[in-house]
Length: 401
Ligand SMILES: [Fe+2]
Ligand SMILES: [Fe+2]
Image (cartoon, rainbow, N blue to C red):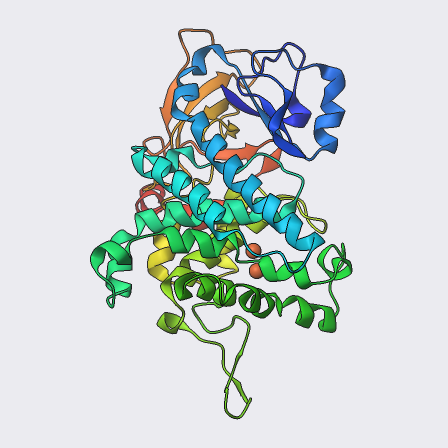
C-alpha cells in the first residue's frame, strides 16, 4: 500500500485502510477495499484529511509492517482525552479522569513494548477535528516512543529511583497527554487567531503552562505535573515560564540544562515536532523532512543532546509508504528507515522519469545509503533539497566529496 495525498487521488484507487470520520473516529467515512469515489475527494479535503492509504500490487508487504492496532490504540487514547476535555469545557468543576487516561495509556504502552520495532510504525493519528486533543494524543505517543529509546539515560538521570521505576514511562505519557491542558483557559480569540499575536496576547498564551499546572497539581504525581509546567523550557535556558522566588516574588531565570526534569526534556521535542507537522489555523502542516531540518537548525540549543540524538534516530524524515521523486527523475515509494542515514531510506521504484510504470516483477529496490549518487529531491511537488544537508550523516557527506 501507498500513502497518497488527497489531491493526488485518481479514479480506480482502492483503499487499503478505512478512513475514519474526523468528528467520530470510531465511525468510518469510507471502508477499506472500496474504490475512492472521486466526488468525495473535495469533502475529504474539507475535513482536513491529508492522505489516505491505497492498495498497490507490489507493496502488499507494507500492510503487514504498518500494524492497524496502533491506530486503534491511538484512537482510544484520543477518545478518552476528548470525552474528558469536552466535559471540562462544559463544566469547569469536572475532574480529570485519571483512571481512564492511565488505562488507555497502559494499553498503548503495552502494545508498543510488544512490537519488535515500534518506530517503523511511526505514524500520527489520522486527521481529527480537534487540534488540542489530537495534538495531546500524538505528543503522548511520540514521547513514549522516544522514552523507550532512552531507557539507559532515564536510569542515569533518575538516580533517586530504582532502575525499574526510572524507566517506567506511564507518567511521561500522562504528563504529555495533559501538557497543554492550560490552553483550555486561554480565550478562543487568542488561541485561534490566524495572524501574529500581539505582545500581550503572547504573554497570555505563554501562561498556559502555569494555568495547566494549577489544574493538575493535586491530581497526578510530580513527574507528570512537571511536564505540564516545564514543556516549553529549553535546554539553553531560553524557555518559559520564568520562575519566581516564592518568598520575594522576584523573577528568576528560566531553568536550563539538567535543572529541567528529564521527562520535560523529552516532551518538548515530541511537542514541537507534532505541532509543526500538523495544520493549524495560522499555518499549513509541514512535511517531516522540513520540520526535522528546522529542529536541527532553528532550534539549535533547545534540546538535551542525548534526547535529540535519540529523536532523530526515531522519527523518519520520509515516512514509510510516502511517494518521493529521486534525483534521476524516478518516482519511488519509501519502504524502510535507516537511522544511520536518516535522509537515505530504502525505496522501491514506481515510475520511470517519463511516467511509465516499473513492471512487476521488475520493481527495483534501491538502498539510498548505498547509492550516494542518488538522492530524494522532492515530495509531493515540494523541493526538499534545502532540508537535506543538515540531516546527512557525516559518513555519507564525506563519501560525497
Ligand atoms: Fe504548550
Ligand atoms: Fe503542545
